[in-house]
Amino acid sequence: MQRRPDWRERLCAWVVAARATPFDWTHANCGQAACDAIAAMCDVDLAAPMREGYSNGFGLLRRLRRLGFFSVADYFDARLPRSALPPRCGDLLGLGDGPLHTIGISDGRGGGWVQGEAGLTRTRLPAAFIVWVV
Image (cartoon, rainbow, N blue to C red; front, side, top):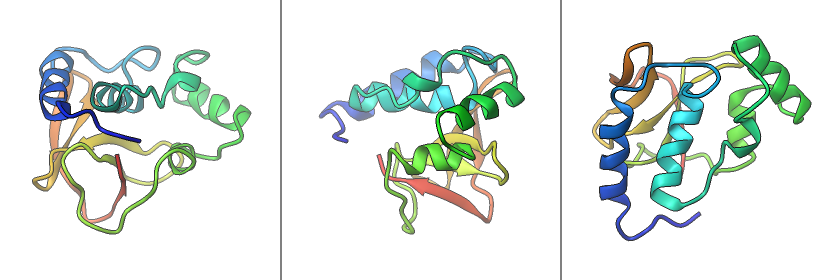
């Protein structure tokens, strides 16, 4: 996956646009929001197979399992390489554990952006997290 030359400007525009969008399982969940950021940076929609067919977390898990994945992390493992290095700005993050990780985008400064109830929120990285290279 290749970032566009103007990926930083595109990522900033995504952050500004997504700040006022509240969490919604159908149209604005954390995974879809992070994939929107990746689409802004790289013109690739990683969430295309996951954008329809569910309205809650249980429905998302059913959708993942129909596609052959046990968890959100499995889904992204099939699309992006993991990294043991600190996340760079724009890398994909998996926060928490279990089949429904909170997914976000790294700010490159020890935090990240995740889709929350009130809109896009900046959060500090927990002790354990996953980094996928974008």
